[in-house]
Amino acid sequence: MSSNVLIERKNQVWIKSESINELTCDKQSVAGSVSQRACVFCGSRVVLYPVADALHIVHGPIGCASFTWDIRGSLSSGPELHRVSFSTDLREKDVIYGGERKLESALSELIPKYQPNAVFVYATCITGIIGDDIKAVCKKITNIFNIPVIPVHSEGFKGTKKDGYKAACSALAQLVGTGDITAIPKLSINILGEFNLAGEAWMIEEYYKKMGIEVVSILTGDGRVEKIKKSHGASLNVVQCSGSLSYLAEMMKEKYGIPFIRVSYFGIEDMSQSLYDVADFFADYPEVRLKAEEVVKTEINLILPEIQKYRSALSGKKAAVYVGGAFKAFSLIKALKLIGMSVVVAGSQTGNQKDYEQLKMLCDPGCVILDDSNPLELSEYVIQKKADLFIGGVKERPIAFKLGIGFCDHNHERKIALAGYEGMINFFKEVYSSVLSPVWNFMPCRNGELKEIV
View 1: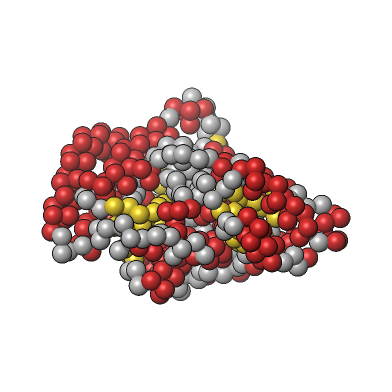
View 2: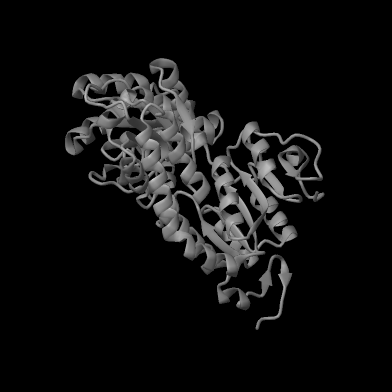
C-alpha cells in the first residue's frame, strides 16, 4: 500500500490479498481531505428532486440552491416544476434577525403561482445554526393552503450524504399512507431508488408490465405526489439504489408490513435477476415467472451479438470504479467482466460494511478498495494500477482526463440510459468509444507517465 495515505485514512483503503484489516466505513470525512462525498443537504436533494409536481425551495444562501440545481438528469412525463430552483436567498441581515418571515413570505407567493401538489422545504447549514423553526412555518402554510408543506431537516453539517438520504426518506414518509389504495391489484410493486435518468424508469416499468406487474409508484423518478401517497398499497418494495431509499423501505415494512428486496438494473445478470426475484415473490402466480423468462430471453437474444463485438475489442483492459453507492459497483464489476475487462480500483461514497464484504468477494486479487476517497488517493491508485478507464461521476471526470485515460459517466448528471438491456449496450458502446479513442495518442501524459506524442 502506498505510504502517501493519510494516517486517518489507512483503514478506509484496502487491497485484496495484501490487507488483513477490515475496511472501515460510515465515518465522517477527514477534515482537509477534500472528499468526493457531498453534504447532508445535497443527499436529500438527490432523492427528492425528481418529484416533478412538487415545489422545492431551499431555505438558505443562494449558493446552496445553485450547487444542487438540476443535479439529476431525471425526466418527467408531465410537469417539470422540479426543474425550477427556488431559494430564500438568505443574506447577512436574515442571519442576524432570522429567516422565518422570509420563508413564509416566499411560500405564500410561490404556492398560489405554481399550484404544486406538495412543497419540500430544505434546511441548510445556516438555517440550522441560526435556529429557524422551519417545521412551524411549514405547519402554518399547510393550514393556509391545504397542501402538504414538508420540512426536510437536511442541515449540511449534521453528518454525511447518507444522512441526507435519511432526511429525504423521513420527508417522503409524511406523504406515504395518505392516498386511496382501493384500486391497487395484488400483483403490484413500488420501485425505490430509481431516478429515471435518461428515461430508465420507463424502460424498467415496461419490463414489469410485460410480466403482468403494476408499478404503483417510482420513488422518485418521474415522481408524482399522488402516487407516492398511495404507495403503501403495493405488495412489494423493490429497492434499486441500496443507499438512498433503504430507509424508506424499512419504514414501510415496519408501519405497513410491506416486504422489500434489493435489486440492480445495471448489467445483464443483475437486470435479469431483478425480474426473476419479483416473479418469485409472486410464486402463487406461476404465469408471472414464465413471462419474466420470456422477457429475459427476448432481450438477451437482441443484444448478444453486440456484446461479442465489444468483448473482442476490450478484453484485457483495466478499469477503476468509484460511484455513490457500493451496490452499483457490484453490477459494474460484473458487466465489465462480461466484456473481458478487470476492475483494479473500486470504491464508493456511501458503502457500508456488508457492501464492502461483497465487493471484496467480487474483485480480483490486487484490487484497491476505497471508502469515501479523495482526488489524490484516486489519482494515486489509478496510476499505480495503470487503469485504462475511470467510471465515476462529474467530480471524477477531471481526474481521468488529467491522467490521460478514458472516462464513463455513470452518475446522476448523465443523459444516456445505462440501465436495462438496452442500456447495457449503451454502456459498452461508451466504454469502447472512450477507452479506444485516438485522442489519447495526443496526450503528453498518460497515467502519470510522460510519453512521446505520436
